[in-house]
Length: 251
Ligand code: PEP
Image (cartoon, rainbow, N blue to C red; front, side):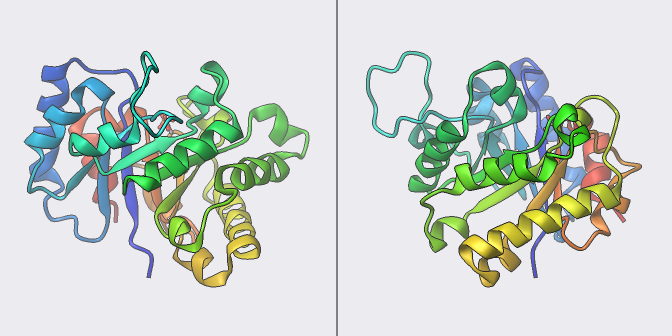
């Protein structure tokens, strides 16, 4: 049985007081959500404060990225997986399409970051997803497979047990254009088959695959009813406690 995960990516939104207010408002609204894991991802500089304020709750905290570098050193501007773990976060989002598109993230750096995260006990939420032109030219599956194989290259069985995959078609992120549940299921099934071919059926059956791209309170149920959709990575609709809680408490 795969326990669903609903994760909120706050991107570069919210000042510290707003992040704390949203986290505290969310706490009672999802306190009874035992059916899924709840994760929120504030910016780096808010991680410790938010994690401290959520201590003892059922909400976990994620970073939105981490360094490829594992050891401390002269890497100005970088934040290591160990530092993220040290301030109380348990997850890290890696390879988000905004980082791939605008900040030079590659399959190789995603792979290194994933290994760095896992080596410090963090759960890596590894993002994959095709651009609109790639879907329209019939290349969506090959693009996603290349990203997936690149991200997971060299991972052991026990590494694979600690990653979550997020399928986020780029054309659906922040655009209001959600993939239909059937389109999403088709790709999630493909991702699970790919994991199965590479890492075995047992790992594939246990791997959580989240959908991301304009998930809202009114479309979450349709997505979650699909066999291979195990949760959601939510951007815009995670910024308000009420709408994110409605997604967490989907029926
Ligand atoms: C995201 O940023 O990962 C995302 C899916 O954003 P949105 O829900 O706003 O489309």
